[in-house]
Length: 105
Image (cartoon, rainbow, N blue to C red):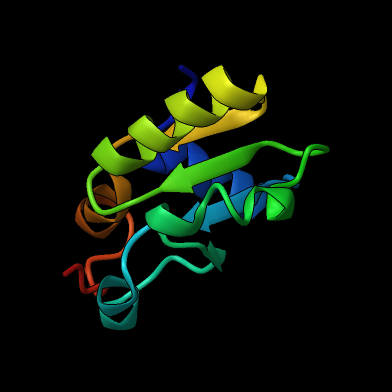
């Protein structure tokens, strides 16, 4: 499984590196605070997998990295996707290290 930490993701954003961020958290979690990107709940990811880009790295993100790691593994195993990255520590790590104003539910 490929992963990226919050400092690397911030560098990608600052550099304008093409990527897609997918937030897999539940609606109430996203309403509290989010990093941007596309919100696709974990339970909906298989029915919406066509929305995942194939031409750029796709970073999967949840609250702490556990759910996104599970989704990444499933997508790699079932569909052979190889451009996926898990955001280590998820939104909580982003709040802890990059943006302390981000509220995480």
